[in-house]
Length: 215
Length: 175
Image (tube, rainbow over the protein chains, first blue to last red):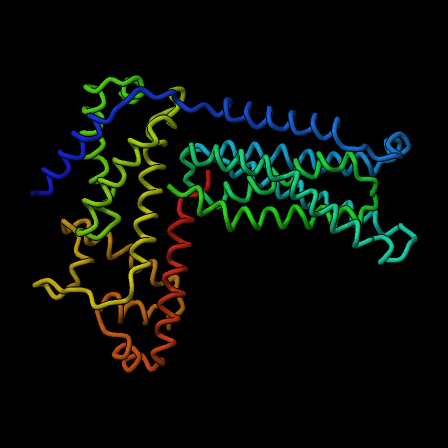
């Protein structure tokens, strides 16, 4: 069989296999992500016990800084991932934004942590810290699964970028959802345990997701 | 035509695939060895078929097509890298068949691109690639010719190919 015949046969078979498809729209993926995020947050707020000092904590800046950092990370990571699902997507500017947000968050948290009077071991509280990190990862799982499923349906041409963005976005959302019931506002604690969970989730996504979303 | 194809119009789809086949052949001829050309074109056509729902009619078709073609090109380069090091069969002209392109212009372009890429490597890595992958020497022969140990030749080939792959993957990443 000649080269031309093989190509013709392939075109014939592809034409014969043609079926109508519904075109992917980025806003539809975004709506799914937003929907899951709201469902998860509703479940967390209604089913888990809120932190006992919520009213007091809400008057302090660190509570809002912690929540805002997680939320911004989730929004930028999620948006970058959804945009990068498009083969010709241009998520580089989102990626830069994500790096800037992370750097600023860590710098401010580390800066403010210098004022805390307690000892290092007491501040880190590794027993509760590992629990917080573990729960953050568990809370990140639904979003990570959804983003993986959406990525497999789409045609991402930069799998590594998608994996990092999906990992950071889902970890950011997991941290945001969990933070409502976590009473720790010490910046050092947040940087180490929340930051560690986010980093671990991003690395896991980078390692595992890339294999799953190649096409 | 792609919008019509998404709606199930077979006539429009056949016209589109015929045009795409020609475009892809030109695209890969400048980027791949001749013996990989057909497979690359067919892989890309299958990818376009299976991912046709990801084309958004509100955006231009060209960047979408180019992104898929580039992705499958990198995929093919990765596959080529994964092949074990072996002697490349030579044609009548004394040049490994895998590096012969279909026409003289493409050959010149490929040689130029190859020279630029090799210049980005460390001398020992470039020597290893040149001796084994281009001149077709065995690992032992390349080791004797370059003064490197056989293990070092292998390591240098591996590192060089990884670096070249990073360079190729990074190409065009900017918006």
